[in-house]
Length: 210
Image 1 (cartoon, rainbow, N blue to C red):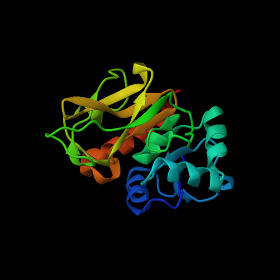
Image 2 (spheres, one colour):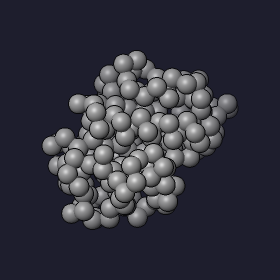
Image 3 (cartoon, rainbow, N blue to C red):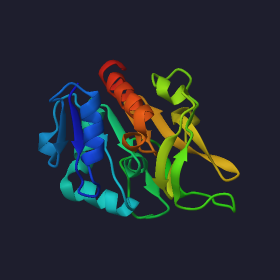
């Protein structure tokens, strides 16, 4: 399975590319900074840090905005990580004029805080699986994943929710899955052994699931 890690120049890609390299066949992982370098049928990895508007601007400036939409429309799987997951949605209250990729029907909102929790949400937390039929066994392991974020994607369709994570008096969607579109609000590449297990499962999902 070829894996194209998309470089929007708004993230340090060393940890995520290394994590995929550890989990994939040697030579299958490439860092791509030009849409023309995207390979047929590859798994697209969309990482990102920062604001929603900076992410959308980077997608459009680089040409990846339309390229990603086209690739996904013809069957390429994609996984968005952190800001990359939020960019899969429609828009964000952080940057109302910026329009996301629209691959998941949903909007990004600020986390709701109280005295129990602080924003940004930084540190280890659980991700409880809601899609029982999914291929990601590591999400059933009751081990925590690493988070760094203030906003979260709210899917309009509950069937798109893969995991939820407790925060304050409630919870937020921490992973989404719709057909060939996958997103994690947490950082698998920074989540130790369970994160590497999850990345291996993502590669298997991309290569085998329809």
